[in-house]
Length: 95
Image (tube, rainbow, N blue to C red; front, side, top):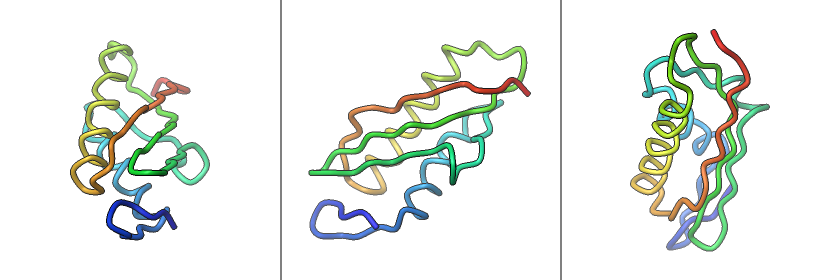
């Protein structure tokens, strides 16, 4: 369980769901085993995310990674009122 701004507490499962759904809004992206390949750290009103992805073959990987970074940062910023300092994307598989 993570404590956000204003003393609000959010479970790790809820944070994982936010990140996975945001990342998978990018066309051709699937998060690999979210419980094992996704890490969300929240402290002092800021968040850092590390995420491993499977991406559809033929996609432009830097564009996909930027899209995931933008969507994840926006979702956490909006839903959890945190400043996202990093979204580290690792593309581990082409599907």
